[in-house]
Image (cartoon, rainbow, N blue to C red):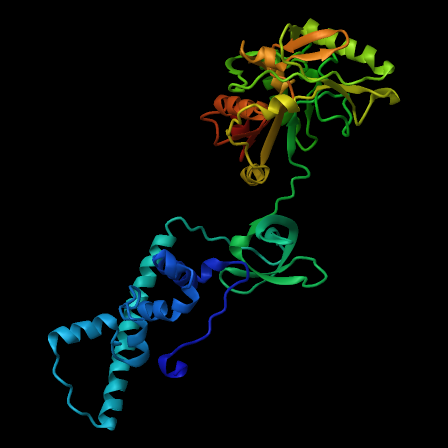
Length: 458
């Protein structure tokens, strides 16, 4: 029967259900039919499944113009509605027909049905292709090219992640490639092009970094907020990539000198926004002071005194109180053990209403920067401390030490909605510049395809 009807097998790519369009569409339609049943019958869907399939198969399909029953039997099937209609109209009895004439007529009808169905299906597919190709982009890879592969995360089959780089071995079809994924179990896999993206080796493409010249590569990623209380310009400390030409380095130096007033070790404050803490009708949260060893008490006093001098904190009489903890820094200078001053705001965060402003996905930001030839990155000096707190929020950030009770005047680290507030500010600053800039909190990247454009973008 399959050979007579011209039915052939077609194979699809693993983990690419978009190619199984007819199957996925049928599953959606069948699910809708089951949900359309009355509540009492819906729980017995497995018993009623043959009736649902009968109803589905007697309805003409839009793609081919015929019902599945017509294409299979060569004539419409007498369903329940057909029988009711015949009872009303009292149709004439069909004359008896010789079996040979019936078979010849059936073959003739089947051939006519297949011809019309193929024509209708081709027109429907061309229309679907035109709709799909409006936003489709042809992507091709060459053997030996490195790519990222989107593959499921074990044991979560519905969660994917990008892995790589892997190597293209062979092009199997227009949209399928044989890829060496490097696994011991199945090193070679056939993958759809939609599960691949090009890999760019960016080892030598970093052009500009605003960083201290004396800072080690493995130093603490968070800024040393008290390294200097003087507003010393850091232009001399900006490191330029070795891959830049002498002329390009001169361009960078001239640009840095032009905006040298922007490089400081002491954070300023912005008037564009302020951070608020919405706790609703919650009562003040007061936590006891953590017991601190004697050798760290002097360190706490010094850190508080430095913050008072910077205007970051002030004395407080707030009923709110969060404890202070000192966390050892992963890398210390001169072999001395250094501590980082932190406030434990977990109690405050529990009663704070969530700010749902989205934080960018790191993988999407990497995709945005992947095709750029020139890239410069900037790190803000104590970015959180550049945002003021509202008057209502200041008392809620209060913390206690043995030496007294204090509260922040700027947004501290550790608050629940601090990342959302900061990301909203950065997005506002970069509004209209999305074509050549991207930001993840206080890390800002400027990217361009040519050097002249890059200088203008910077």
